[in-house]
View 1 (cartoon, rainbow, N blue to C red):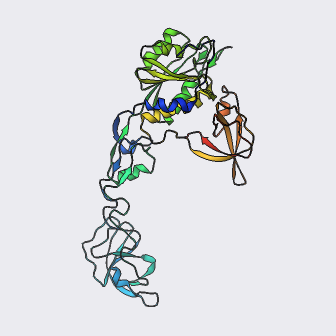
View 2: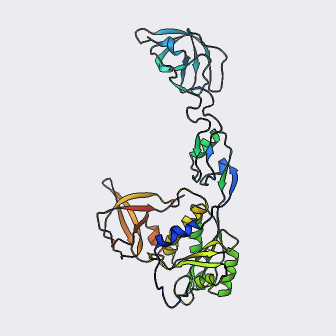
View 3: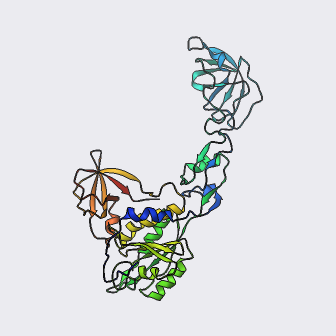
Length: 416
């Protein structure tokens, strides 16, 4: 890559021309075995098949009486059939008593079905007469019974490779006696904020100094996308110190820098990376707003990202480039975890051909319609514009603006 400092970008790369090929070079990480109870949001490493039937015994689906269904045929409120009550089972009891054609056994929801019974009649469709039961309606074979394997059969596919574990998946796995499972290891992300103008949060900034916040947003986003973040101290604009930071970063799966990637005299990172024998800048400068100075590449086969220093541009660039890289390392089915909905634009949004715009919008419901309103078209340093927004509307490179009244897709900010 040529040094563009003080010269500007000769051209801007299109995201779709670079990112898909970049992701093809990303390797999935190995798996580890963890307890199912601790697996929320982890990515399944291989298909999971059920080793058991669920339920593993036939059980009553409601409170009532276990009965032989053929003995109830013809029963009605005007002509009830009468049976002898020969036992009572709770949900945890079993019975060795075989039901005859004249018998019933009282069962609770979840009770094992006694021998010879093939149906359960609802409690409300009967009347108790001391040790006898009047039955007012017929039942069919299997009625009100959860049969063996009705929910899950042995060998059924429970979860497929690349699935992200949700709260409802955990009880499913545990019910199938899967107490441990293989998941892809979390990528370790090394995060380096750069810039001699930066000071730590809590330090009163002098004129010309800026409180460093990007490493915190990058760490938070890394966790949301499924990685394990490691924040490092501020790196000043110094070649030697930047090289030392890169050497530290090579011990991790992904390296992320913020700042130092534009075209100014002190934007050193891309040239530092290119100077490494095993360093390669894939692209520097993208046709996008915000985030155009983003640079991506590899160091010793480890993906390295140089994100812009302005907070909004940092977060947008992370979601465009770093987020999908994390998900690819995890072998996840979904690279984009942001929920999608459609809304009607309340205002025109201008844009330029040849550039992808990521427009911050807020959402409002009026008269059962969802409206999207731009909170900011410019200003990648204004983090409050993201806080006031609910999501992003992308304007593709081949579209010159969006008009009021159009129905557009809105990618909501991920909240995990």
